[in-house]
Image 1 (cartoon, helix red, strand yellow):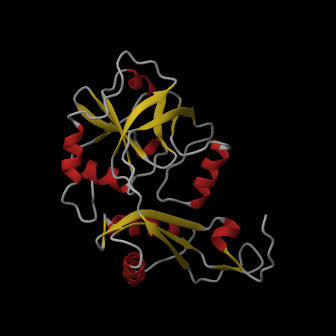
Image 2: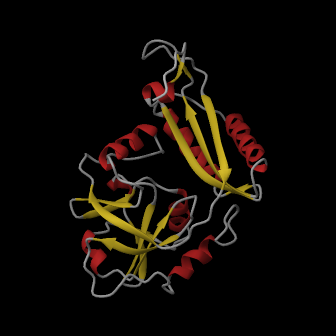
Length: 259
């Protein structure tokens, strides 16, 4: 344990008054930057922290400057908080603070194994990646070694701790409903907008007979699922299903995508 004495604290740390975005910067390009920024804007608006178009332009330029110092393919986390926290919950600085973490991206596209777990808390609509929501996830996971957990509630699939899920069944790709407490991921949004995936209630029972499954986020883009622990299937999950190519084709050519 480290011990320090401070005069001020960041409101993101003090009160979880912050949101964040994680994405790759590939050859100076960011996949769906407008979508990432608008999600930050929407999340901070929940705290009555308003951001301008010029704030977005400054943030974008700062991300590219940081990325060029690292590599041509970087993983970057953008965290936006309410700024300095003087003593007291309501003593706000009205000067938001943007923090950037950046590191070279280490590719790992091997198929993942997901552990099916129940989400025990009430569901609520998610408009952004709020730090408080992820603190809630950590409390649920407790001692889990990683985020390869697939959450369900009342027989309906939700998402993993860090990614959306896509299921191929009966000739179509499906993804759980955002209304079910699922974060509307940017890769997910692109696939929905282009008609490659449909949003619907995805039942836990579908894990028995779906032909293939992927996880998606703005780091891996698309990654196959090899197995769901605790689910007995007559045939193994296909990690190289021909239907996956339609999703990869949908993303190919998008700015800031490398598959």
